[in-house]
Structures are given as structure tokens and as C-alpha cells.
Image (cartoon, rainbow, N blue to C red; front, side, top):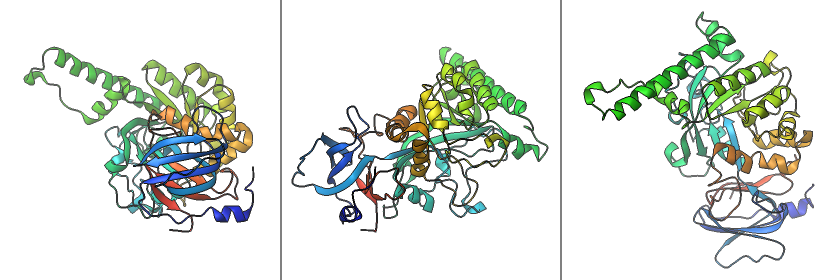
Length: 420
């Protein structure tokens, strides 16, 4: 699918007031990602940061009192399910690298909330490419890395917002890392873990202690909470107690097939609610993943062949996992080199072109991503009552020659191509 013409695309740019509260967004190709056919003409009405109504079909009329925006293609705001954007900054110097507290293999007690910088250039950069929601995660160095959080993005002209104002869910998951990076981080200092088996043992031991910790607190509450018998508070175990109880999802960041197998083993042993991230060799073990019933955050799709655990990367990974019946979303992950943030739209386009297809690929960064993260009541599709997170394109979103024209987050224009 190609833009009709450059002249039509140029005509789509509309000067908009920065904080208008009511918009009528019309599209030649509207992808609501809700029930029903996709890609036909339609209109989305926005008021006070929420979607007021969605109309499909030709001949829609913009009501009085609404600022009009027109695009060739309109989609829900994109969702990056696993990224270090906002805590791993654009300059790639110690001052803006806050994704890894690599002083202890178990940092279950840390939370990305305390590192996130909404003023970082990359936080605004991803917004300009249509990302309106992202799950920000700790980096890859620690076996137990800490708590992730889900946040809205902001544009360069957005007023300063605190982390809590941008938060969708502050403790969205506990991140565990398997594979090469944890053992390289600590093995070079002759500190555990030095091997994969020690990494797995440390995670198991921490989860077992968390289970025992929770049992102590449960018994104390059952005994009417005698203050003199109150268990000692342990921040690490308290954070992990939510994981073993099923209240907090776990994310296992894994690359090789054997590491994926280990993650499934641990998840099964402790009856965790969990998902797999990265899964570079997921396609090699897709039957096991499907049997485990665990969703996958797949990416980066354009993963470079930089070490043994990524040497079997393929652009077809997302398609093969989807075809196996595994719920998938696409992620960008952590990048150790400048420019530090991959473009979710480009990663997904490669997956679409390599077997996933246009509509399934778009679902993998909208409604499917929202369902996996448990935020589909707020975002992921264009439906009445949901957050007005919308991207307006001048052509097919997965065509390299297309552009993001406008991005709206909760009804506010956070990006407009060419400025206001």
C-alpha cells in the first residue's frame, strides 16, 4: 500500500492549537484495532482526552466545535512492551545511564520509577515515531533486575510532567535476566553468577525466600498481628512476594532456546504469572512455549548478530511464533550503543514484511500488546471511552517513505511534523 500522491500527503499537514480539547480525526484508512473490518474510511471524535465516538464508513461529517485532522492512515498509539528508553539516555555517558544497578545480582527492590527522565531526548524521540505508551524496564545485567513500569510518552512541546503523572502502572512486572550478560557482568569480578546454572539458582533461591517471607506475614496477620511478633521488613523479599503470589507478573529476558527452556521451568516450578522477552531463538522452541501458554515480547526484530546468543536471530521470528499460536507483541529492548533507542515502527515493519503481515503486525504493537500488559481497558484500540492515543500517517505506516504527521497522547497533540 502506497500513499496516493505526494500532493495529497502534503495537504494533510494541519496547523493545530497545542491544547485543543476536542478533535475530529478523519481517515481514508482507519485501523481501530477493535472489532470489525479494518482499513476503511472513518472518523474518531475526541473530547477531554478520551475517545468520544468512532464512526466507520464513507461520508462522515465533522461536527461543529471540533478541530479537524485528516490523515490517509490513522491507528491507535503504538505500545512498546519492553524498552529502556527514559532510563538509558541519548548521550550514552554515566550521567544518563540509569538502567542497571550492577552492584548486586539481586536488585528486586529497585524501580524504574526512580530513574525515569521524561525530559530525555529519546523519550520525546520515540513519541515522534508514534509510541504513546511503553513499559520501561531495567537493563540486562542483573539476574533479578527490579520492577518495570508502564508510562505514557510526551512530546518536545509538552509541559513538564512528573513520572507519576505519566504512569499507567507503576509496578507492572519484575524483570529477570538469563543468559550471557549477567554472568559476564559479575564473572569478570569473580563474583556470582559466573555460569547460567548459578544465575538460575540465584533466581530460584530468591523466589523461595520470598515465598517463605510471604508465609510469615500471612501467619502473623492470621494471629491478629501482635506487634511484638511482626516479621522484619525486607524490601527485596517484599517486592518478590508479589511475584510468587501472582500479583506481580514476571518477565524473563531470554535469548537462547536453552535459556527460554530454563525460564519456563522456573515459571512452572513457582506457578508464576510471566512472559518471555527478547526470545531471539523462540522459533526454535516454539512448541514448548505454546505448551506453557506464555506470551512473548519479541525483539528487537533487527537484532544484530553480535554474540553467540543472538547468532540465530531471524526476521521471521515473530511470524513463526504467531503461526504457532503464541500471543506476541513486539518490543525494542535495551540498546548498548548510540542512538540507544530503536524505532518500534521500523522493527515492526520488518516483521510484517517477513511473514507476519500488515494487520497482525499492527496488532502486535497496539491491541495485542495492550492485552499482554493488561492495559487494554485504557489503550491499544480506538474505542469509545479509551484514552485518546492516536497516530496520524500520510501513508501506509509500514512504508519507509511514509511519515508520522501527528501524535496524540490522551487527547493532546504531542508531535506534529514540521512543527505547529
